[in-house]
Image (cartoon, rainbow, N blue to C red; front, side, top):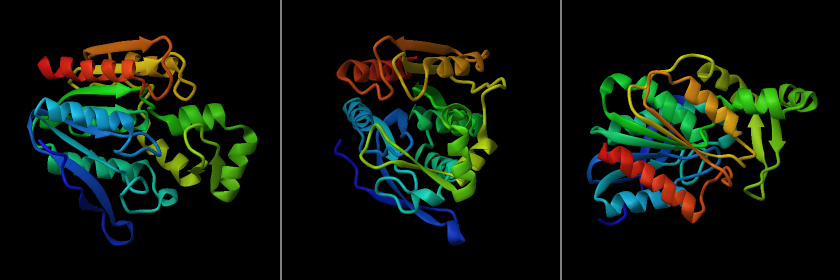
Length: 257
């Protein structure tokens, strides 16, 4: 099976309309839907390895770029979690009409959980694999923990703050809109039930999503079958060969169950 052609999906209407870049490869079920992290795209190393593995197994695989990311249209600074969730739901509804394993990295883990809860009744989500899931990160990890009173003042006054990035040469722009919109999608602190098995992979050396944060998600899923794997020397990306191997094995276990 060869890699699919890039296609575009129109999402939203009026001033909020944008064109989302999607790669979808046909194959057997359960398929795989990949959800990238904040400021990441579908050409990242983990996304490519997951797609290659699915292709080798003859599985259907779908991945896309959020608006303001990668090949998709839209302005990153004007986008927020509600937009990226709308796009995730649109891609799932159109391309994932059969049983699907949802694999989400960092912010993609938050979106994967929101997707699983929103589409629980479809019965089409066979499992979740979450890599350093950054649920509620705009509030719990940024606003409450990392943002000093001075940074909060800048966000409220200027509507944006340029946060240095350890992963790229350009800073991440964190907007007031992103922070405020994130509060509409907070999940931690409540009891969640996806109705599907959940695997969480988390590096103990992760400076961005502390392992204790991922542990809060485990505690929030008392009714689900959860496997929580801590990688003692793992960082946030979990993209070393041994980390990728762990990820692919987790996907295979869910596929076989």
